[in-house]
Each structure stands twice: as C-alpha cells, then as structure tokens.
Length: 281
Figure 1 (cartoon, one colour):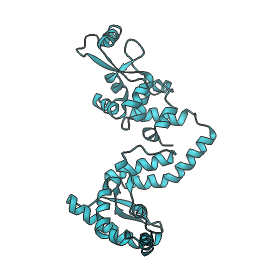
Figure 2: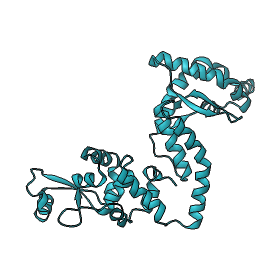
Figure 3: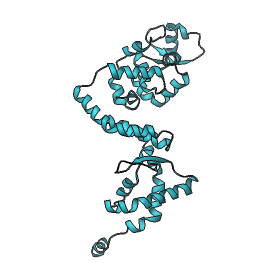
Figure 4: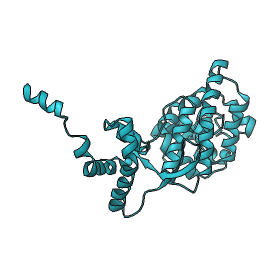
C-alpha cells in the first residue's frame, strides 16, 4: 500500500497511532526539557518544514490531532509549563501549542510534502505489521481494483481540471481502502449518466440523451462563468482514453438549469395514465 494512503485515511492512521517508536527509528526526536512535549518549532525542525506548514496541518486537522494529544496551554497552565521547560521561559508568548510523541507521529501521517514524514509513513506500512491476514488480503484486493485508476489519474496531472483530479483521487484511494472519501460533498465528481438516472430516465433514454445533455450543460456553464469547464480523462468500453468534461456536485445548479431549459417539459410531464387516475379520484 502506498504511504500516501495514510494521509487520506483516518481509520488507517488510527491503527498506527501508538507506534511512536518509529519516530526515533527515522530521525532522533528533540523534545522540550520535560522530555514529554514538543512545540511547533520543534516539530517543524523534525519534519524539516516551516512552522507555517505545521500551523496549516493543525488548522486542517485540529480535531484529530487533539484526540492524539495536541494541547494549547494558556494562563496558569502555561506559566507552570514554562517553569519546567525553561527553553520557553523567556518567551513573550502567553500560550503555547504542545505535542506529545503520539501527536508528532500523527502530524507525520498527515504531512504530504516532507521527506521525513514520507519516511515515517513508509516505515509504518513496510515494517510494522498490524493487520490480520484477512484484512491485508482484502486491502490488496481493493488496491488492485483501484491501481489502474490511480495510474491514469497520475498520468493526467497537469492535463485535466486540477480540482476534479484531486477530488477523484481521494475517492479512488478511499474506495481502495474500503472507506468513504473525506472530501467536501460539493467536490464529489458528478457524472451525466448518474444525474439523468436520478431524474428517472431509463437506460435507453440516458444513452439517447446524455451526449446532448452534456453539451447543453457546458453551454450553460460557459454562459454563467465566462469560460469553458475543465476536462478529465475517461476510459471508453473499448479501453481507449478520451477527454470529457470534469463535473463535480458543485456544478449541480448548472445541471439543473440545463435540465429545466431543455428536458423538464419532456421528461417530467405526467403520463396520460396518471392524468386519468387523477381525474377519476
């Protein structure tokens, strides 16, 4: 399993949360004088990134990091902490964010662009065996299913809509891990056949309508946004790769407008049978 899977999977990270000994196997951890805690600059030095990068990780994942020991000390608690940790005693700060080893490890599971964090994740996945044979077998089977999709997405980097590509990658990785993707619901990829199916169209109707519907959605999008929508790769039934438009749930209002303009009257009219039934009641 690729080490980046840890950055996408909370449940997978939780399985490795206690393996703090990995930190020193990759690189010696320098803690504050109490021997228990580290501050933001200390964690940044360990992972060889800027303090602003660590701040960003905290902002995006505060709840998970708090569950793993992250604390912000203020007032009397801060002053008491500073008397023990003289390294910060002369600071003008009135509060401090502190990490335990568990929290430092959690940061490494989340930090995508640090070579040290990558080494920590790789060590966890390659060396530490925690899953049962059944779990590993199931994970491998899921990974095989999604591997070709990941290859195609990687090859498309820089060639297709970046927002769609990022969201699609998260979906594929999460499904490969047997989880629900952790992305903004508005960023979930949206496909024309799925939308039309949701409108009650049959398989034959979808096949007949989807090409023109897609063109009309694109026309509405361009009218509203002043630019063409992004594109994504799509595999055809013959195995060929073609470019098609990259929609997400964020584009639903555009879909709905195109539907109302061009298709609602035809496909949402009550049938004659319904009208007869209504008249008889």
